[in-house]
Image (cartoon, rainbow, N blue to C red; front, side, top):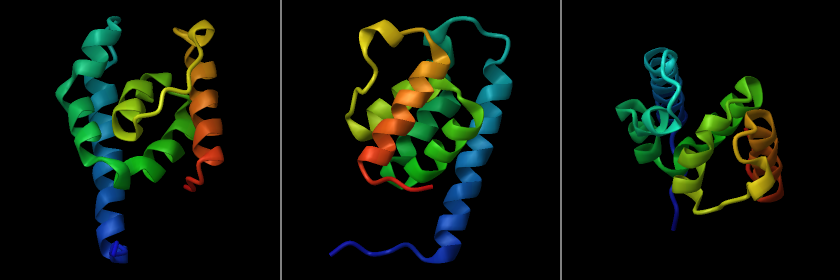
Length: 108
């Protein structure tokens, strides 16, 4: 039986995701290496939050169009919805992930 998180728990998680994303983006803004961006400790903490963080990540992705979240989303979901021809094309990567999320019943 899966328990439904209490509203205060979801609010805490939402705040945690937002804070991690903001800190990750601030600290990686000067970086050009995708490996450095996705290897950053805040990015790894985002991944560690797991599936409960997905609605907040998809909402952020919809607003930010930040395709750099792709590796985190793959790590959490196990999915790889990005076709090879979209690699490196950040806006297309974001759109593919959002399409995948809707097709798989995620809401945000």
